[in-house]
Amino acid sequence: MREYSVTMQEEKVLCKVICNGCGREIPLDSADYFHGEKTWGYFSEQDVRQDCFDLCEDCYHKLTESFAVKLK
Image (cartoon, rainbow, N blue to C red; front, side):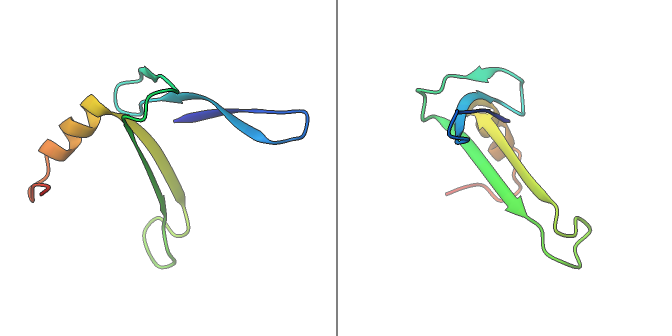
């Protein structure tokens, strides 16, 4: 989950990243996290819903280890 602040010029500035898996804050200077975004299409059960999430490296590994088809 990303939290933003708004500057005087009304620009969004990323101020915090929280892992959606474990809830821990991910340091902004860390490039070691996964960010996923998906906009669902029409006629899906999510019909134009937008999802986005962030995972720390530990939670990313937990998720990918559970895959039936392993990553290469």
